[in-house]
Image (cartoon, rainbow, N blue to C red):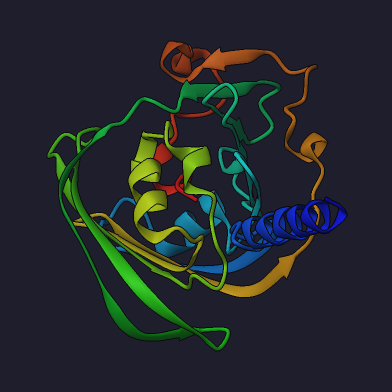
Length: 245
């Protein structure tokens, strides 16, 4: 009897260890990117785009949270974006406006045309990357501008795709399921408008606190579509260029 109990205990321990070892080790930490811009329109220079969105972009990610920090210098520039999967809301800090603008993660202003995945010759920080390319239409522009976004990623850094399954905006849910990794390089070309490039220059795996992703409770919340933009000290920003992680 004692031998049987010992055998069962060992079998259970082995099952537990195998199951535990099979759990994915999802990336938690900080990725810093350098950003570059090209403008294809006369009304906006590359320098102005840099001022609006910054030349450095930092992504913090943990489970179903992400926080994006932009070192923008323009008074109307994007400063910070936070996503909370528990509410499926995205919160945006713009310039020095004493408020947070928010929108539902279920919203989307784009029509997907097609997507493709392939191997790539690109390496970022010595990490060999695959790529996924989205072709879609930006319905916010008067001409429904065609856009191509290309992501380069390495599954050395795993992303918890299930945590973002309700994040429809910017096809975050589709990207997460297909890539299952945070991107290390990103290229976005909006026909006739601009090109945005982000390349990871530093990756740090670290334990983050959930509190690091909490919004400032002292700031009033304004729904992005309900904001009185004419009476605010800023113009309505273009979210598509900034909020996709």
